[in-house]
Image (cartoon, rainbow, N blue to C red):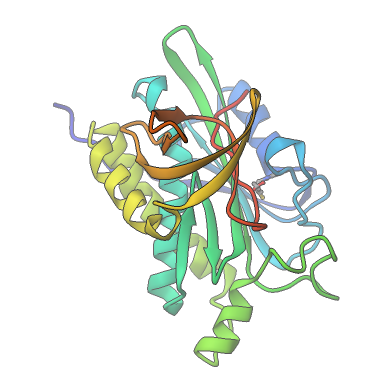
Length: 268
Ligand code: BTN
């Protein structure tokens, strides 16, 4: 078997862009290589999942997108966003001891509030994943004037955690980016060498507080109350329906009580 190396990332830095994901998608279509990273200080039209806006018009966060050209089967594409979530959680834990956890598929929460969101997009042609763009948005500090009212109770920043728990400022964005890229690179190498299980197991461990819970799932076929079980081999969420039947969720809105939503999907 070919030995997979941790990729070398080539970073393109922008002061302002509409969305690093849109920019990276254009680079992908123009043939840019695996490992291209686009980082922007500000986004004028940052995108979240489900067509939502991602609040990133200032330099209070780390906004970047990774362009990847994975060699593995498209079936495992969903693991890329999960690997990015794992990389963010492990970085926050190791850099500042944050109590960061993962919520399926790849939201990062501290004390129940969202500190990072991930938007995965891609193009599959036949049986090949042509490219994937994994966009990562981390609230490093709170925006000037605070989060807008609709996010006030669901969002947090790494700085808020650092101030409250370790009495120190948040790590600088460069250190955070370095760490997330190196943590992600290690998991990407695992996925590329066929060791999907190790990444899945690690993600499941970081999602433990979200598993075995009653949640509400909103999908195309309506809303369901289910109990979360665990992750499938390809990163889908396994849930138990009321009749005891087990279902596999690949793309849905999931909410625990009134907390923030998540959706797992790789959509072009
Ligand atoms: C979510 O809804 O939770 C996903 C948010 C993803 C935001 C990041 S910021 C960098 C990249 N560029 C975008 O336009 N979105 C992603």
